[in-house]
Length: 171
Ligand code: FES
Picture (cartoon, helix red, strand yellow):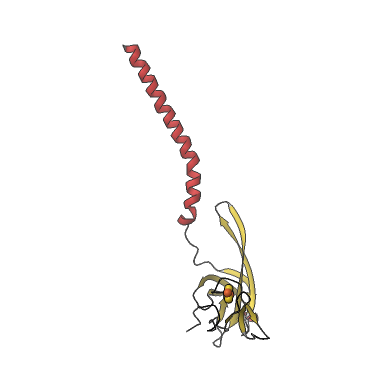
């Protein structure tokens, strides 16, 4: 009788032990996967970050000029270089405006035209979208909204660009 009791007790002990070890191993395997899935959600947004463009503010005129800049982005263990572009100019008040080049129709890249048929407008080569200098979409062309713009900042005479927000210039 007591022998039988001891066998049951051993079996239970083994069951508990194996269940515990199995659970521990499963948790060890699942934890990185769960962390990978939710990590970007839990990470605070760096909304206030500004990236140095390397462009001297003194060189910015009232004619839109293409400014390319890049920064390092770390996503979990993956590190990459993100390249961005802005069309930058000074408005009548001397304030710096930095427009996103992404067309609001289907996302192609717009170019400032200095001359030719679409002179002094941003032109989208995909479907002929047009925008005026302040980013306002030209009626009768495919885009239905103005170009977005970057938040701007100046430090030591250099232009810094931040997050992209809806166009503040278009009234
Ligand atoms: S994507 Fe620019 S006009 Fe269509």
